Image 1: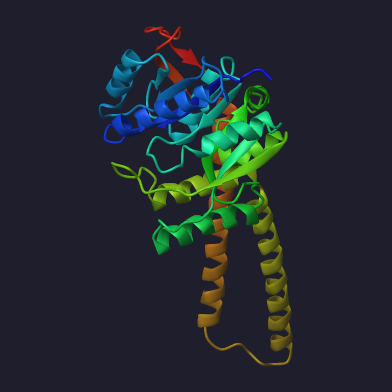
Image 2 (image 1 turned 90 degrees about the vertical axis):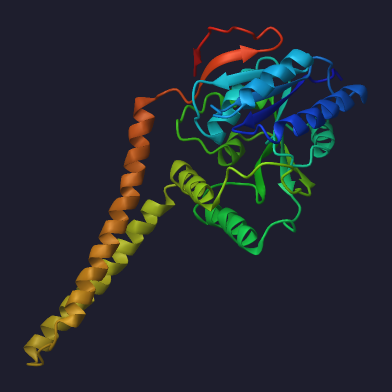
Length: 327
């Protein structure tokens, strides 16, 4: 079987502290895979600078100058982790047979790449990197992360439990994935929609080597909400069901009030009335907020703005300093 060309896609945002360390780990890994005959010598490491405000892009440039295995692209501004990963995958899809996306913080076990490539050679088109356990997480982090996946599954979003964005994807899958044109993207919930044969590789996640995490609880919650509203309409259905239930209770309340009036038993006090009005008013505001979120998503989709803009490419045959590509 022909050796596949592998591109390791690494999104980077303000990673000047950790990148000088992990970049050499990625280089050693790709050289190991080539030496073992698992991938072709044309395999590369592709860094995606997501509009970093520190020295990340300068470090990437220096790396590209030192070794031919390094490539780099830079977005015109920060567009978020998911868009950065997408930019790298779309950049690599016509040059590589397989891609592996991974964060540059050193937490994901790069040795799992060997098994990922072997699973591809055995016929799998998508291989998900899945955390085997969360011993390194705090109780709060573990509780919120596991709740994140359970919430997504409950809301009808098809995700692989404890899988983030460490995955192998074949060029065949990427060419089909290119047909997904939505602006609001949640990659870990979108790739299962493409189909094709898939499997999972389990690994232990390490502590971050250096720097600080760019994914606090607020961003994780925002990502979860984006994933739900981008891939599921269950919240709207829940609102409909809740509205029907409250309407039923209100109808019973009206009947009860009429019966009390006809039997001469007046309802004394205003507290119960005010409580009901406030409750229904609160439900209506929350419902309008959820529906508004979906309308906002529709608004962004209709405008069809580019999901990423590559302002610069460096390394190999990709160096086009003044070229700006929109996708």
